[in-house]
Length: 502
Ligand code: AHR
Image (tube, rainbow, N blue to C red; front, side, top):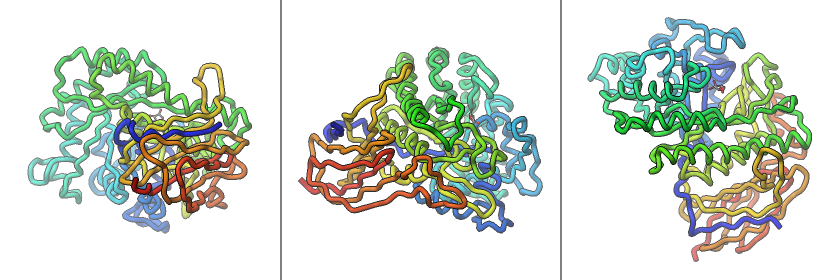
């Protein structure tokens, strides 16, 4: 029997909107001919940004957008990206060794802030901790956040067209410092983080949220040593707000991102579900050094990482991949999990927004398409800022060596006022599921809508030629309490119910 039991008396708290965050790096086709087409482009744009994408992105209420990397952040000099665009330097991009591309710096701090403003996202800047000095990062913060008229840097910002401060709260100090960010030891990384953030002290940092570079996937040793070193200083001039972790589901079965068999479907879902181990195991170690849980877990890169080359650019855009229902299911499993761990996860950023890994959008020239992942974010957006409702799942489980048991049903629930949002994933590739909706503390009774995202063939993608092959359908629904609903196979379902007064 499949059932979910919502306990309205139990909650992990408010679901931080930032759990629904995004990531945009200067890599491959994310910006150039993706998000950014330039003001003189034939492609309809708003101050250089692709209008169709901006309009679509706005609709899913993106809470936060991380930029400019990724690995790119660790060679980025923010001064390259300010001032008149025609005068900005061209530089070898971090990823040049992979795709031979040069960074034009047409998108810099002001353009990025403009994009954030257009879509209502908070900016999250990943600052360079490897190849510039602490003073350089401190200056960037001053440039962004200080009122015009107060300092030379804030005047420079105003002269560059932005008199109002950008008020950037989220600052990642370093990216993947275990790898591309200088191949540091965890001890060195913690020491550098403290050195950089200490230098920022003079800025008055109470509104700043600094994020320290955490582990790659399940590297618990990194977290243990990082936390030990970081907590060995009993006094921090500028406390950290969070510790990051990056987790990608690498498809190791040699298949591409579009084509899979039954084994490939479940393998990917097992890997997505592994996020439970990633977050819970890192948190357990963090608890040894941060028992009050002052630090958030920040999953600032996550998503499917397939073999690239099947996206519309056919391999020209580095890491660009197509998406289908399997990718949408990975997004649903992950977001349901983040909702259910909203007491621990303070922010998460899916990688990456456009023309890259696990993207919400594919674009090029006049073409633009929303992937199935986009529709998952659209369906789940009502959870942002909602009060989490504990949701127990009963469903058959699958077993695979090296992984926890995988439930064939994924679920989470939240309440905003009287509107209940339940999001479900039927992980069963072939069979539909009748799911009983039980509850404790309140009856699930009322009217609303049921939205379903699926496709007869789960390998179906939205392409430039057929952009609406995978689209959610919506119907009205009335629940009377203890109802049973039917989920089609490999489907993501959302219930939005205005609960009757009791
Ligand atoms: O998202 C692509 C790359 O993956 C990022 O630059 C890096 O941080 C990670 O390894």
